[in-house]
Length: 164
Image (cartoon, rainbow, N blue to C red; front, side):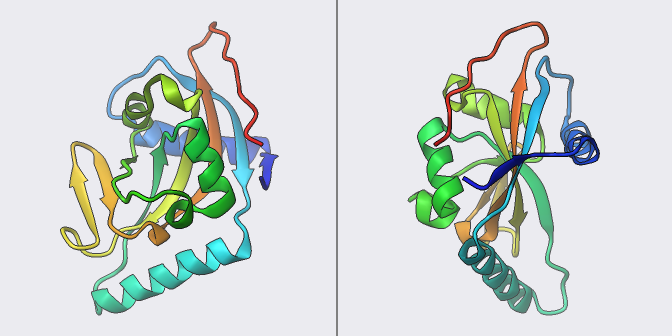
């Protein structure tokens, strides 16, 4: 699945993204971070979409965000093996800058795991929508996972289902 543990400095980077995005305090904290190395075709698909959005924006700067998403176990496997656009049929996936919102969206079905992704926005109302702290991008080729973040509540045991 192209996942590998990260160095402490990379974990601090992910922790910074987590902390910066939180709008309010949550009981969950990061337990473990793995870096995802996407296959070349997934990178090419993302870059192609990014370039397309860049052209559509003309003189405006394309905005990209680091955002969390909380897929269920089966969807997580599909995203990591095929990417968002091929692994999931729906474009109505809520990406959130706030990890607390993504955790709430995932409920109990995400197995204490979030994907931290890079998303390309484009034109609001056309290429993406924002609703209640969530970004919905119209073309999932504009999303690519970067890290798999395992989280938990301090002092509580978590049970992890292998992704393979």
